[in-house]
Image (cartoon, rainbow over all chains, first blue to last red; front, side, top):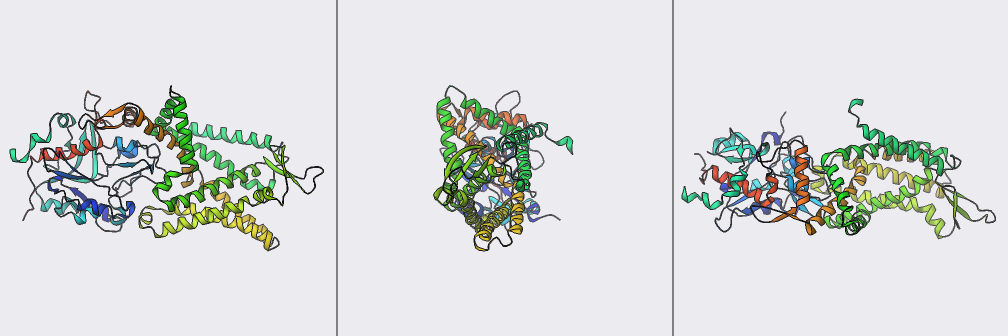
Length: 203
Length: 350
């Protein structure tokens, strides 16, 4: 029998983000890291664009953060959620932060601890939506069955990404132009081209 | 099953047990001062020593742990030996002895953990030497009302058993028990009431160790209570119960949550990495220009990923996403989506 977390997924569409920071405020209410938001909500390029986007943990099937942890402090639950570091084990070394291809973990040096989005496990493990998804007014962050997203939106939910030769499959989906092929995260192109080269009004 | 055993771990574990056995024979003067009534404790301790060394060996063989330790030793024994060794000693004092980082997580947790940690450490310091026969007491000739402490069979201090030192010696375990009982009650309260902990905790890893510690401390105090206030009533049963709780603790030690006592030492390595970021060469993100970590640590993480079979490198180049700062990586995802959708905002279908 599938669980609530297996039936539902988290979908992020940075194109829809209006930068209201409601997700950040709601995230800070999560009981596993109360008072501190785990969402990164940043402008893409403040000088060139008003565009913002939320970054949450992508909850990789084979998380690089856990693989490089010398203290073996990062665990993935059976229902696919990569948890924050275990408090008794985490030594705050930052290896996870350096390894994560999505730039997610936050390391607090004074506390010698890494925290990150755990998909509001206190809520999602008991059949509730993550805080961010409940408050996002533009549904840039959406939690629900994939079939619902596919019916309601033109863009496709994709959860496979290629970095170099490494394919990363994640529990969290990003809305893209295709759901068939893995998304190539072209670092070389990213390095050479700025956001100004792809402004929507120039299309 | 035995094919999966970590050979080095077994050998190191057996080596540790052999060394302990020799020290017990030597320290108890060929077992003359070894108390046979404490044999269950000894067997459990030997199991704990073997298990802890075995698990530590397995843990050290993991690529990230292995590289952290090797890098730590390299940084210590570098031309900055005195500065880095001083840093490690300072980190040991602050993180291991005072556990300051827990205080920054929460003052409540610090008090709780400090009581538990030092209650256990002081308890170990008293019980292990007694179990191994390394300590014993005797009346010194000519001072029948005094006690003499013998360490490894060598005469040491003479003290009045009814004076402060005697009181401290004979009540140290009572003090430890009180510290542990307060600590476990605080920990239980937190685990039963804090919604975040309730979500992520498990019985085996979080509640069982507290139950074991509570059992050891309470049954230990009952022994004192029976001696002083019940005239030794039911002492045998109480001592058997206490013995089994301690055996449970020692058997659980290598495999459960208590193993973090040994793992915590690697925090010294993390401090060296942090120091390297502050003083050494920085890894600069080619996109944002930000120095986001030390070059040494970035190279280490990339080599760990390679060793574990991750292929993040862009073909024919050594460049990978790990060369970008975390901020640039977040921008990479947004930019990729932006480009692939050609800036078109999605619309909700009717």
